[in-house]
Every structure is written in C-alpha cells, then in structure tokens.
Length: 540
Image 1 (tube, rainbow, N blue to C red):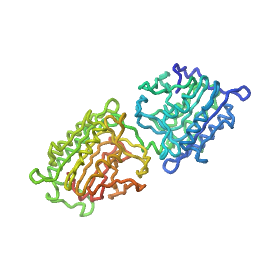
Image 2: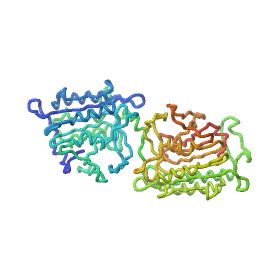
Image 3: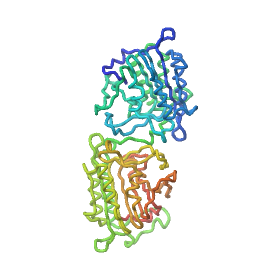
Image 4: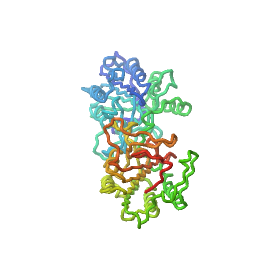
C-alpha cells in the first residue's frame, strides 16, 4: 500500500540497501512486539521484534541507537508509550530520511462511524492495555506517522496483525491479482490520508477482513508468518522489487495454508466478528417462520414433552397449568414490541419483515395479544432513536401480572467491554438501521431500558434473532443446556446492575455470544432468575 497520488508499478521500485559508508540520511525505526496476557497471549511477537532488529542492522545499515524497541518485557507496549514513540519516529524528519514502523500483535476491526472508510470499518492495533485504555485506530496511526512525512522522507510500515490491510489508512491499495492500484481515498472526501510530500508504504500480514497467524512451522520458534517470510526473502534475494517480494510471500503463505495445520488462531478474532453481510445470513430468511409453525402445531395439539430424564422432567402438564388467557378472563396487560431491520446494500437482510409478521400473528392468534398493544417497527422506523423510545414504551407503567414481549430480528455484533462488567470481556449489541451513523444499542443499555424497570410479577420475554445474541439482555443467569444447569452471568466487577425491580426477564436468543445466527444450532436461554426449564411451560 502506498500513499502517492500516482503510484508506480511495484515491479519498478527496488528495495534499497545503502551501506554505512555512503549513507548520510538518518535511518530510524520503531519496533513493537506485544505479548499480552491470559487468553489474549501471543507467543511469537518478541521473536519477531528481535529478528526485525537484526535485519535492519545487518542488512539495511540501521544504527542500534536509532532503533527503539517496545516489548512487554519492559512493560513498554502501553497505548501511551506506543503513541509517544510514534511521535518520536517522525519528529524532525528531513528529506532523504528512511523510517520503519513495525508492529507484531493483535489487530481488530470496528465499525466506522465517521464515514471515511470505503468498507465501513476502521482497522485498529491493540496495545497491551487495550482493554482499559483503548485501541489505536487507523485514523490515529495515519495522523501520527503519515501526515508528518515531508518531501523525500520514506516510511516503511510492516504490520503483522489481523485485519491490518489498510491499518495506515493510505490512499492506495495494491491489487496483486490484477497488478493495479485501487483507490482507498475516503468516500466522504473530508478525511485526510496523504503525507506532507513524503512516501508511506505499508506491508501487512493480511487483508482487512482476514486473520493473521503465528506459527512454528518454519522454524523451531514461534514467529508471525509474515515477519518470518519477509525477513527470509530479503536476506536470500538482493535487489528484490516490492512486487517480487509480495509474490514470494503470497506463494509461500498459500502453500502454508494448504499444507499446514500448526497455525495458532487469533484468540481475539475467534470471538469478535464484524457485522455479517447478507451472504452469511441468506439461509436464515425462512427459519423463524418454520419454528413458529411448529410452535403453533404444538400449541394446537396440546403440550408434548419427551425427555429421557427424571420423572419430574417427563411430567405431563394439565391444561390448567398452561396460562392461555381468553379476552373474557384476562385482566393483565399484554404488550409487545416487534422490530425487523432490513438495512441496505451489503448489510441487507431479506427475512426480517417476514419474521415480524409471523411473530405478530403468533401473539394475536395463540397468546391473546390485542393488535392495539403490539408496536411494530420495520423499514425506516427502525432508527436508534425510535427503537429506544419504543423500548421505554414497552415497560412504561407495567404492573403485576403484565406480560411483555420484546422481539428483534436483525444484525448483532460484539465489541470489547471497557467497563469490566462482562465475564467474557465483550459487550453484545443490536444494530438499528442507522447504526453506522447513530451507533449500536449495547447489552448494558438494553438491560437498563427493559430489564431494570420490571416490577414484581411482571414478566418479559425477549426473543432476539441476531448474531452474538446469547446474553444481549445482560441477564444474571444463562442456561447451560448440555449440563442442564444455570450458570452465573453476574458482573465480575460487582458494580453493574443486571437484575430487575422484582419482575422476571427471560431471553431466548438465536445463538451464543461467540456464534453467528445462521451458523449455529445452539439457541441460548438466559434469565434474571433460574427456573426449571423442563417443567416451566412457555407462557406469554
């Protein structure tokens, strides 16, 4: 990736190796290797930094005093230290200077709310304290080490991290298959991605939507695959062009991916997924309708429970145990909010309106809900503001005996939890139609809107047909179906409130938090209070 308005062919630009005897310009490098702790640990990053430092000194004439190394060994890979060091790297740069920025660690994608990304996502690198101090975005990286590059100053950035294709936010991206440069300028036209006359070149481990890998397949030690191959080929071949180097690395990585299974999957990217496109959820369109048809059949035929468990689990309920109230006897209020978000372009979902129609029909025909007490939001009414207002309406003035239903069909995403109230370190979120500009609705916010206000003897059923929705209501317990028991989901910090005001909240989700709705057969139940899931009948 290069930041010139008229980029040259990669096969014409050769990688320079100036010798100490002829070099007069300053060469400066910042090398960062982040190891992290616990479940986020990466084992090869310090090896990567050592190898890169050796390459710069022995093969490219860098002086030791001009190379700054940040690793976890000295606890120097904090956000603050990395930002300060990036400022040091480009400070007082002059024509002829050669700068190197190297990062080995985690990379993450996040939704772009500023409208300056063509794919709708910001790419970010993760300091060691990213959970508390935050990540460093492509916009910030660009402003720190790209904008200050004066005429005839060259920066090489080598980023061995997941989702790192455009992590410097440069103006052009090289399409290796077509041998052309693709435009990466901001669609909004407002953001600045160019230098101050200098040249910035970024070599990344993968494209923005891909995951990088650490491996010991090439040597006995762990290394980032990109780092190892880049160093290997630069040492082996003199006079390589950038195109030659990319082709060699691509060819070797392709062989590795086909023949090797020793790669270590990224512990962060395994649990964080961006919004799936319509391709990922195309097969979802008719799933909820089929489930509702089956539900109606079971209701009309009477309860049927088949369990090879204890006698209590096989106990057949009597008709009086099933609260299916008629208009003549029902005094409690039944109220429902049904939301189906279609979205646009690549985020489009085709089945959500059908989902809402089917759910509405079920509530009216089989559970005695009145049409005037059902609020339906679809199409342009599914904005963040309207959804929040409607959630407040759902629980307003609720009284003992009331039965409330919250239904959402749309996209769900995960984001890192910076408040310390999530046991898995991630917040679950639902996406309104305007989520790219107005933001998502987090599990914390959903909990405060429709769980906290539930008074004694008020029951809320939430049905969320979205990705990453297992604990999207942030309830205190979730059900482990395999072990047939409830597990604690209370906040580890002890500060956050997740309980009701005496009522009962039950959430039925399409999948667990780390899963995508269409790719799983594991629906998740969570609740504000544990109950016998095989004895308590589904009541609305």
